[in-house]
Image 1: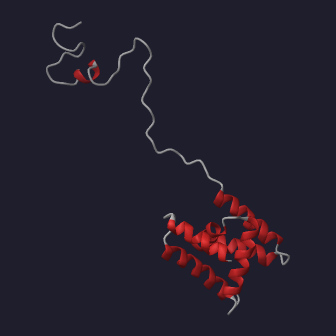
Image 2 (image 1 turned 90 degrees about the vertical axis):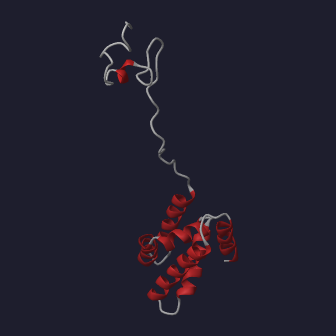
Image 3 (image 1 turned 60 degrees about the vertical axis):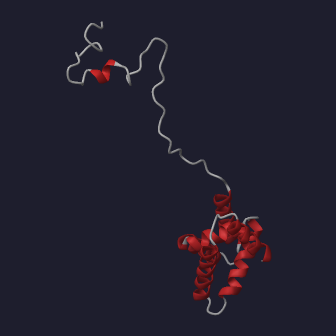
Amino acid sequence: MTDHYERAGKLIEQGLVTEPDFVEKDATIRRTLDNLARGKGDELADFLISQIALVSDDSEKLWYKLGASPATLNDVLDAYHLDQTGARGIATLAKLAREVTTPTHRQSRAPKPGRQLQGGQRSRGIGSSAGKAALPGCPPTGGHPGSP
């Protein structure tokens, strides 16, 4: 249990989460568990953290996710409720742990590169006749009077 909160402290030190935010997520989970079993929220939270530790070395990250997503927390709690052996709950936590700890490839937001010029082609940007034809006083073809 101590390791869990020490790792949470490291997330805070690294600036990945703020302390008030992590504390809020922790309290949200504990309140939810306390609403399910009056007076046993902290006991159930400690049990859930120990279960998470069985499937992940990053229990603090998964704990944060559970606190941030009530739907995800409900999925985990339903899995434990539906299977009294706990196997379904552990399987659900293992799946979530993979989602939290496995990096995903992010879609690039960079603009697509311009068209590649092949040898002998001219650009249609600055200096091309494409922009000059629209200027008043310029002939529609060729850059200036006397040019081909």
